[in-house]
Image 1 (cartoon, rainbow, N blue to C red):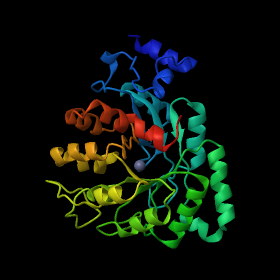
Image 2 (image 1 turned 180 degrees about the horizontal axis):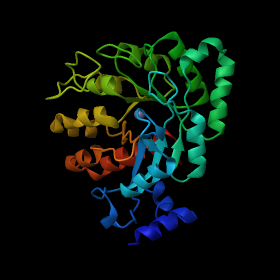
Image 3 (image 1 turned 90 degrees about the horizontal axis):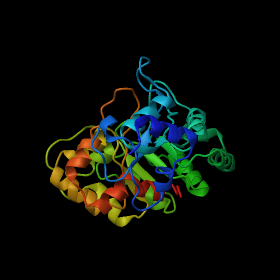
Amino acid sequence: MISRRDFHRTLAAGALAGMTGSLFSSSPELRADDSEKNIAKPSVPYIDMHTHIGQYVSSEKNLPASGLIKWMDENYIEKAVVLPLVSPESTLFLQPPELVLAAANEFPDRLIPFCCYDPRHAKHVGNAALINHLKRYKELGAKGFGEHKVGLDFNDPLMMKVYAACEEVGLPVLFHLDTIRGKDKPGLPHLEEAIATFPDLTFIGHGPGWWASISGDVETLGGYPTGDVAPGGAIDRLMEKYPNIYGDLSAGSGNNAIARDMEFGREFLIRRQDRICFGSDYLAPGQVVPQFETLQNMDLPLDVQEKIFRGNTIKVLDLS
Ligand SMILES: [Zn+2]
């Protein structure tokens, strides 16, 4: 064991013997001092598929990149995807990709930047220019596209134009789906049209509408349904049929989906162990992230934990 101070010093020095060396190995070790952590020690360090920096809905709550790193250190999170938000429906305080790329430059061993682009801008931009724009972000380090949280139907022609560009450039799309952003209907036909139209594009699902669709009896895509999950949900159906759809467990919606019916949730995670990525949606200091406890209580097989906690994200984002 090393002390917390040594842990930070090790990270700062870039001599990441324990952490980086462990990043792509099958059984990475955790070296930090357990006594200073907020949560139970997981079997492997997490890679968080879904975080934000800056301001979100409250001008009082600002999360600088250094604050995100501190929280990661306290919660066994080795790396985190940081998602910009550029659409007016997504947040009160927009977070441009440039902010995220700068943060990742500051903490290159810890933060994984994404880029995004509001499809309504694409109305005025040709396909080639859009592709070049996304290529530039990729060259600057972006590993994916999102958080794609846009006040249009999921299969709106402008949305489809952006998916086509992401497929061409090779940027997985992490999307938010509910009744306001990435709009769809129970059964997720709009999402299915996009997944089927762009088979070489990886989609990563998030948000109330996506996660309510774990259940076959979903009536609205806007809430946080409680109680037992009915089999036959759209998520299982789509994952069975298409290899290019994943889910991130972030936010209240992700936690609720697996915690509302722990028995179904556990079986779902085992059944879809190659498609689900740990995520928090951490975006403000002091935010409670219930996923840690839920996942610990699930007591999943160790190989399933490795995939969900980190392995699937390494695979999907090609982090090796
Ligand atoms: Zn988010």
